[in-house]
Length: 127
Image 1 (cartoon, rainbow, N blue to C red):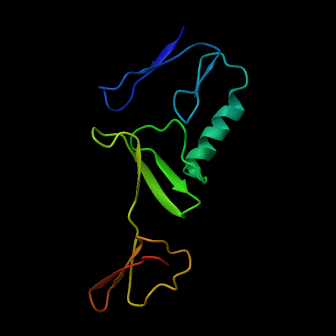
Image 2 (cartoon, rainbow, N blue to C red):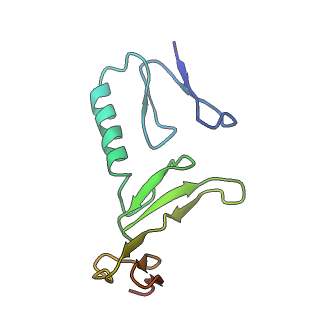
């Protein structure tokens, strides 16, 4: 007998997972009852969560609030599917707070550094 997987947001349509199948509605696969090779599917889902879907391209079936590590631009992004922003990946701000400037390695446009000794905020642009 199929089962229903509800979103946290009760206004979204639940996902129906049929017996013996793997549902691919989202970027994580949902396993139906009695699916025989579930181990690999579960392990891959956990790995994708652990690495925040790290890749140079965005996940193809995102859910609102999903995190993605954009390995091309070296930054964390989240999926904003709210009304007026349908389907946009937005960067998660990052800030270093310390007395000395970071060495700049790995910094990308938009990263910030707060000079904790002088209360001055700096932002990387065209690094």
